[in-house]
Image (cartoon, rainbow, N blue to C red; front, side, top):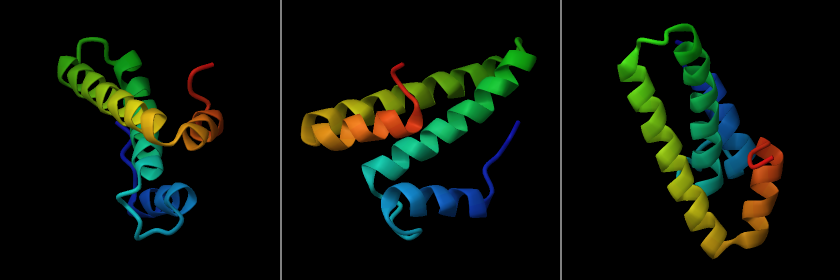
Amino acid sequence: MAYLTKEQTANIFAEYGGKAENTGSIEAQIALLTERIKGISAHVKDNKKDFSSQRGLMQMVGQRKRLLAYMQRHNLQGYRALIEKLGLRK
């Protein structure tokens, strides 16, 4: 399983949250979840019987979905820019 290093996490927060210390911004949280989902998706494709990872993946996808719904309600322009930047909702 590919885990994110502290440097990768800090880079994601710096890129999407404005600075590395801004870990609470919705954009940064969604971007972090997206990166974690990509890593676990690759693991689950290789290990089809790893049901614990599948469950964790589904929980992360649900959390990202809830955060995106919140962002869509409160900041529609930012939501559209974020999904474009992350490559979601093709």
